[in-house]
Amino acid sequence: MLDLGASELLLIVVVAIVVIGPKDIPLAMRTAGRWIGKVRRVSNHFRAGLETMVREAEMEEMEKKWAAQNKKIMEEHPAEEVSAMIAEGGTPPGAEKAAGSAEAGAEAAGKKAGGDTPAGKSGKSDAGHAEKASDQEPQLPLDGTPTKK
Image 1: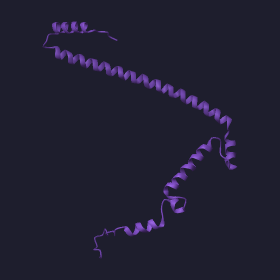
Image 2: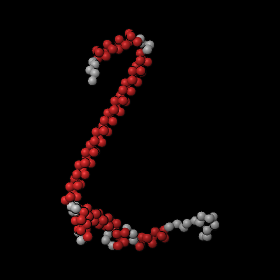
Image 3: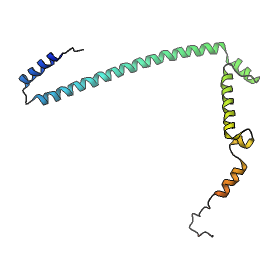
Image 4: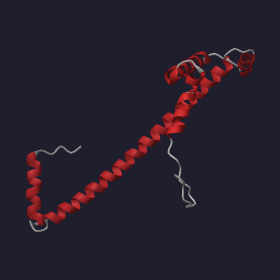
């Protein structure tokens, strides 16, 4: 942008001191700083607006591409075929992976909860439930009536 070396900056400072005077230099620097800040904010706002426009244009292109791919897939595998496969007890193309990973996750969760017994799969056991009930503290009535010991 601006290619100023040390000698050029020194010359600008000397001219500023002579023209503006040492008394008004701080005020001039503050004013110049404010103007530079405003210019930077406007340029950043402009740049952000351009980036948003580019991002939206890219999203529109991607949506068109996805719609074309979806249309192609739907033409290759019509909904009637998929519905018929499901009605016959089969799985639609691509569903094998999803079903296999869901079953594996459920089996792992059952083993982690306590084995293959029905109590282990639910995560609760009758012995543990009875033990918890006996360990509970008695509840005080909320109406203010005295309790018996």
